[in-house]
Amino acid sequence: MLHIFFGKTDMTYYGPSYFKLNYDVEWLEDPFVQDMIQDVDHSTYAGGRLIQSDVLGPISPLELSGGVQTLICILKCPDMVFDATSCGQNCAKWLIEIGKKQDVTISLEYYMSFKDMEPFKIMIENTHVMVTTDNEYYLPALELLQEVQ
Image (cartoon, rainbow, N blue to C red; front, side):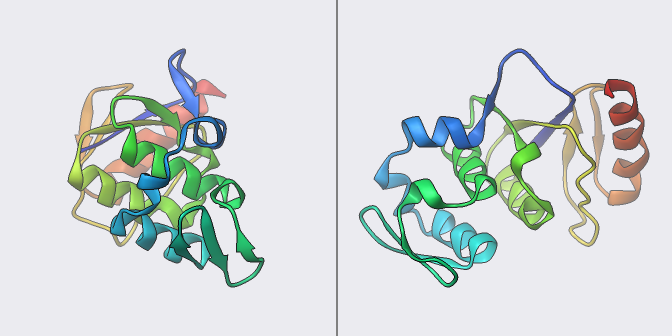
């Protein structure tokens, strides 16, 4: 299940920084990771440390977007809490999909919509309330974000 904490926490990691220092090439060999790279960055894993970007040409994994780097960290390090604020709206469906595979906790400092992805299971960690639709998620998320600003 996807667990979301709105605001900052002491034990939160910044995905792009963690990825750059800790990623393993084996992470990129995962077909699920390759699907995320293709969908979010419009790039294809070519093997080893090579990504083929539609926009940039051949790039290293370190040049993937911060959103994809964070998604990969969330998937591959499920016991850690990552700040998903670096993830854009195009990462939302992947957060839901990762949450279907395993329990993961993220922090967010903006409103990320999960509209049209229902039903889902999201535990709002600040209040320990589980929501299953975007309508159930919308107001608590905005209220919590307003409190932490």
